[in-house]
Image (tube, rainbow, N blue to C red; front, top):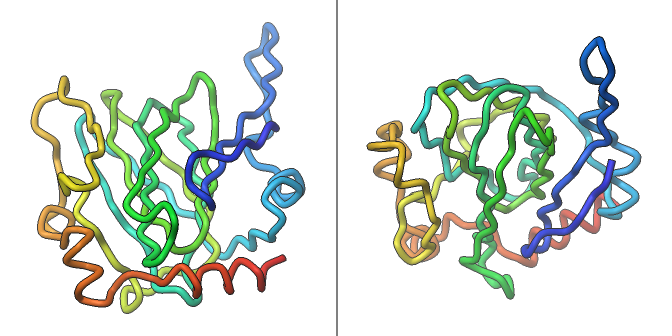
Length: 199
């Protein structure tokens, strides 16, 4: 598995080696040891989630308070999604910036997202399934959201699939600046301290 840093500190793209033959294909879609070697930190998996979305569904942008935060390894075993990471760590040099990658069942890449970064995706195929490995169990009291349509972030969600389908919670989530003003974003210093504790 090849692990490469993306344009935001704390986001890595993981590309597995695939071994096709007449039976089908085999791959290792997650390797904790190779991930730790490149990221210089542990990723302790506490929960696994799976979502199924129809074309045009937009989920996110979601994150959790730090500490402890919630790191994620996101993998698309069926279909295709545009997967997005946004740096919402107050005080970060890349605050407000985003990276977007296609995850699908052809390249079978995974995306590792450190604590304190916001995550969202849009289903590009008729049906898209996403599996998440996460570092903490779900706790609604520490979950936070940022509006994925915030024009100041400027995520290029696809415009060729009709109206995007969103939950009320995501549709009415605060903009990045509103969330920062309300004090609901993690600080970059708290996130760095969390990463250091996982080395």
